[in-house]
Picture 1 (cartoon, helix red, strand yellow):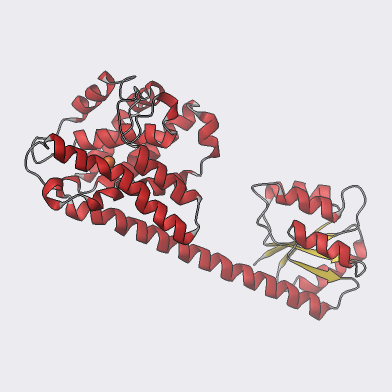
Picture 2 (cartoon, protein in one colour):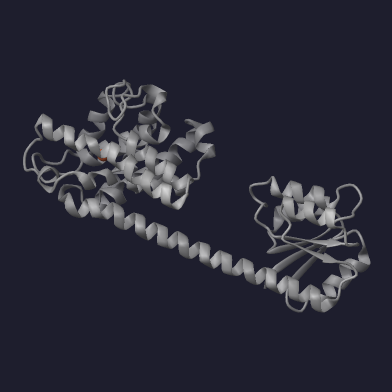
Length: 340
Ligand SMILES: [Fe+2]
């Protein structure tokens, strides 16, 4: 049963709304906006019916407070207003109310407005979930296209996704780069990292699957995958206007071969000039490469791979992140073992 908060300083109004809606919804009546915020700490409603004229905190102020909160801003709010006032309605819509119901209201109008609103929200939620699924599917297939062609990296994308979750969570727990991590939506970051090698799509099969070490010309061609990755993701962004996910994907693609001492590519960025995404991916990417068999060499053991990475702290890798990596190396090993 869907939950509706009704917030009004008039007991008569509260009981009228409750009577009208209680057979279909879980109605919670609340006598003031301040109390509504206390209830919100315990329960998130599907809809709030909010009176405008209330002492202390009025409905407009309460809505502004809701909209400024990450947690509550998506809860739909319908205003209950005592008189038809166009100016109030306009400003209410501007700050994010979804509808107005004028008091005294008819039970039929109230029931229908509430039903319509909740129906719309349900459709939006279902569509959004479908779009997310579609997006994840398309990303996975795009990333796998590279894996189909480059047989030596089979499973690389899935493993790096797991490594990334481990490393980012461990960094969070230890407060490493806490300010930056706090701003990240971890699911978006982890998912966008899956496209880091998408630019390899332009590298020929011959080079990708060469059964020997690459010569310097071939290596130069492989290096282009960072720029190509940025370009491909940039094109998707131009067409879709999506920002958060694709911006991150672009950063991963363009920066995962940068090195802490400035000797990497694409741009030779140094230290914290390299975006955090790139500094994290650099360690994960190389760990997975080292523990994987390549056409020209055998796989290193997990211990050897860790050793090789630790020798390059401060040269190739960010010392703070590498330290966390060292602490969770057994979890990396477990992922690798499960995958093989
Ligand atoms: Fe790469």
